[in-house]
Image 1: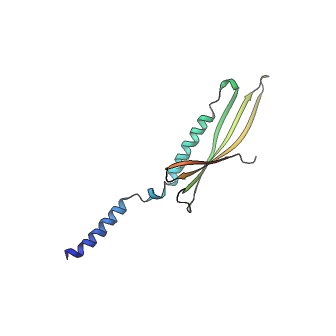
Image 2: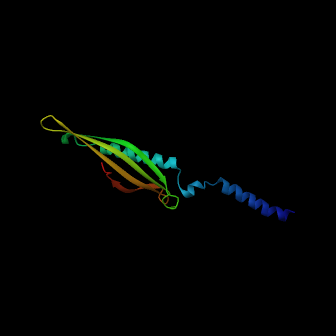
Image 3: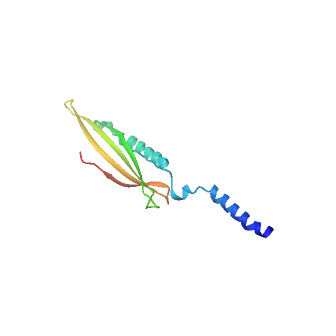
Length: 129
């Protein structure tokens, strides 16, 4: 009877060990985790984009228009693709005291790489007006 109990005990232990593993970690992060990474990336880009030399007499405001996350189920190396959409408003002060405002829309696309566990920049586009 003890001989028959060994395979049962081994199967039971295997189930416990596999059940305790984070199987999701093998396939990548959750949608919420990727969204948080993209939000942090967007905040960094906003901060960097708004720091211009005051001598240029240009003020730039980067507004985060939206962040989209799309699952890529057929790509295990890059299970998520995300796009950060910005609406950038620049205001230039001319010598005669007038102001010139420009609106630029910019999209930045990333994929989550499971090997490095980081976002990889893919492209930057300016959508049509």
